Amino acid sequence: MLDYSFHWRQAFRALPEMLSGAWVTLETAALTMILGTLIALLLTVMRQLRNPFLRHFANTWVSIARNTPSLFQIYILYFGLGTLGLHVSSWFALVAGITFNNAGYLAENFRGGLKAVPDTQMRAARSLGMSAFQAYRMIIFPQLLRIVFHPLSNQMVWAVLMTSLGVVVGLNNDLTGVTQELNVKTFRTFEFFAIAAVLYYLISKTIVIVARLLAWRLFRY
View (tube, one colour):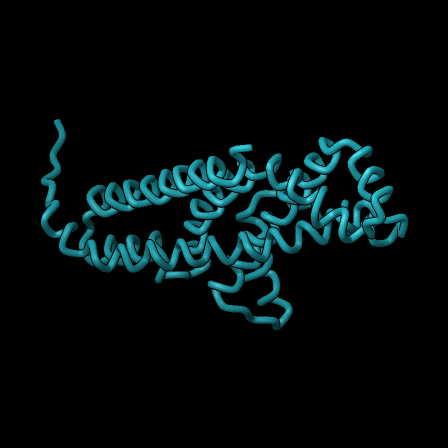
């Protein structure tokens, strides 16, 4: 028979501390998305260039990011660099690992988005006297954003969930880290991790809802 006494009151008393950890989780995920998006745009440009070194570098980045576990990437940054005498913080290893992975997946999304924009759009823009930069900024990029917007929001949800991997390298101020610390102190595993799961769910659903509202506002026409 089930022989476990639930103590939800003790868990709910720690809710402010867990909410503080949830905010750190959201900040970390947002930072990895910003950095990942910028790097992904750069990788997308590099994959279009004729320079074989830059093109192969970008393709290698995308291939490694999409075909190796995020946990391994974080381990290599934290423990691997440590064995070489390059010690980084748990938070830095987590941010760098998720950013590396984000950039790879987003670069592939951007590549697919660019292929979905007809080549005639660029030719028409150039025929109107626009420079290549103006054509991308005013014609190509708005269409690309419409195509990749929902994959971007999905990647943001993924980034939020992947921040939980920080606990394996000693991060203790995000939601999972705070939950694990409380669990070690109280041994109320089910209660604390159940609340943490609800918080992750609420964060993820909020991101999806906000993304849908933004899509409705930006892409109504």
